[in-house]
Length: 233
Image (spheres, rainbow, N blue to C red):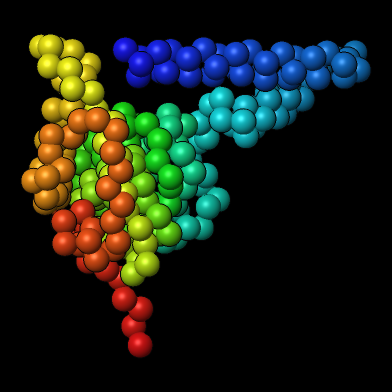
C-alpha cells in the first residue's frame, strides 16, 4: 500500500510539473510580439523550441540524436542519471534504431546510475532481448538498484571496471495474494535474478528493504557480470 501511495504521489507531482512547464511556455509565447503573419517555418521553430524545453525538464523523452558520433559511429549508448520512463524511452529507441541500422552488430551500453524504477529497467532489458544485436553492458563508477538489473540483463558480454560498485536493492513486499502487485513483482524479480545471475541463497526471498553492495569481484563471483575489464598493459 505504501508503494502504491508513493507511486500515486509521484504521478501527481509529475502532472503538476507538466502543467507548470506548459503554463510557463504559454506565458512566454504570449509575451512575444505577434507578427502580422506567421509562416509555417516560424511556427515550426516555436514548436521545436517548446519541445526542447520539455525534454530539458524531463517532461517528454528525447528522440534518437542522429548527429551523436558515439551512437552512429561506435554503436555506443550511455545510460546515466535516474532510470525512469524518459531514460527507458531513449535507451529503447536507440537500441531499436542501431539494431535496424546494422542487424546483428554488437552494441555497447555503458551504465552509471544510482537507480530508478524497476519497470523502466525491465523495459530496457526487454528491448535487449527483443533485438538481434548482442548488447554488451558496462558498469562504470557505481551501478545501483535498477542499474544492476540493466547491467545483468545484457545479452552480450557484461563487464565492470575494477573499482566499480554494483548494488542490488531489494524493495519487494511480502504480499502473497494471487494476482497481486506484490506477488507478481517479487516473482518477476526472483525469476530474473535466478536466470541472469547466481546470487547466494541467503539473498532469497527478495523481500523487505535491503541493499547488497558488491565489489566488482563479488559481482563477478555472483554472476552479475561476466568479466572485469582490465586495461591492456
